[in-house]
Length: 111
Length: 119
Image (cartoon, rainbow over all chains, first blue to last red):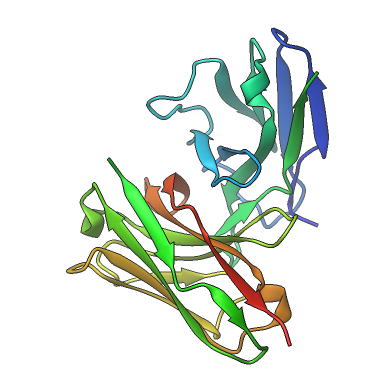
């Protein structure tokens, strides 16, 4: 059980917006400042979509946005497209000796 | 163009050792921290280890501390992961990734190399 809790699955129709949450459920996550989000298609390497809570790397669509409130970070995808169907992982720093932690992942299905 | 190419994966028995390599190109290798992340079959991502650009500081997940050693050769633009005392639960695809803003964000990833530990 990760100290970063994500819903196992979310779904949405093309054109809709969805939000994936990532909740820090352990005191091991202190600060929760270095939040990032990764997209992974089956059989492929992860791709950085959001870093530093809400910064978007060059080349990533502005349909992807990140935010954080308290101990919950969120990834919002607007204008859903079929190509967005993938697994999404959040990540954060931790205060314990394991320096980086990933959430358990969320499978996004585009209906 | 940034490229990361892992190699060295394979099938081995519990207790064995293996060294993974990650050849980097397209960026100033010595200026960036690098990391290893693994993914067991059908499971999520697990951060394994990181090393700063100079190689002077290294970091490990508790699950591999004392068994794995990360290193780098900046003259060869290559990252390594020496894995000893391997266990069945080390079975995974191992990705190397380039870090930005310290060791917490990974902007480029390799294609991964599969390590299978089984008797």
